Image 1 (tube, protein in one colour):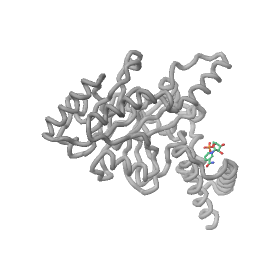
Image 2 (image 1 turned 135 degrees about the vertical axis):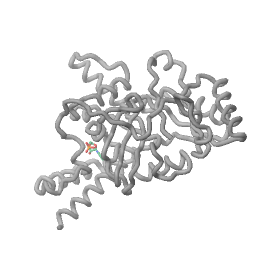
Image 3 (image 1 turned 60 degrees about the vertical axis):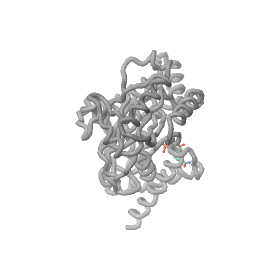
Image 4 (image 1 turned 180 degrees about the vertical axis):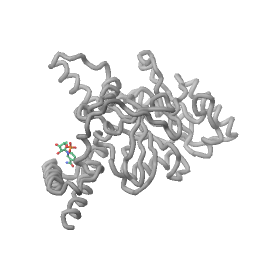
Length: 323
Ligand code: NMN
């Protein structure tokens, strides 16, 4: 059927343009082209409602409001991370790992986004469930709300079955606009982007979430169905699947490189378009991670360096870990 082929072509183009616009921040077509294709798709779907699929770019918003969020048990617990607070503790963390392995190893340093940890489940490439971390074992099903995040693909580029973990956050610009609007309406202001993101994802009516312009970074996988051998390899695969990964992630061979990364982002964090409250450090290779294992509460192969000023303001630790 000609309409079906055109609909499929439009969806593919729109998904590609959205990826370039929202994930890569590098649109390749003018907005008018995108808008025109979206209008054509909407018209075709209106004429042929039987051809609407849940992964169509027209289907991000519009689900009926919920009465409550359903509980979700994570396939693999979403653990929290231990913390390190200064150079001495970072050196001790690295020394402990290398003593335990009996040799040096490669680390990954990444930004610690100040938002809400989430899990996303894709089956055969389709987004089937999005959940909050909750207590790490049981979270809440917030699929409807997460679908409104434009950086989040409703369909992966390959038909993989994978659970990915990441952070939903409110960009600084969305936060400033939201609070300016609220001030104009004499409504209570959100204290910070993290609270605003949390409040937005807790909405039972996903059209409110959609209006808040949240974004997302994925930072790991749950159960390793991708057969990656290291965290950095898994992250490359997630990017290839069309998921939004963060480009500032860096592998480090020595503690000096880790310290340089931290010093750089301590200076530069105010220039980022989103808030971070620290740096996450992980041992890169999965076999090394397995060898290091876990304490009762958190993995030994990863830790979070917390920026000094943020620590004073943060009362509840909600750093989430994924292998
Ligand atoms: O709500 P959506 O469809 O994401 O669009 C919001 C705005 O972003 C619109 O103004 C649209 O034109 C723009 N946009 C542009 C591109 C592009 O490739 N130029 C892609 C996605 C959205």
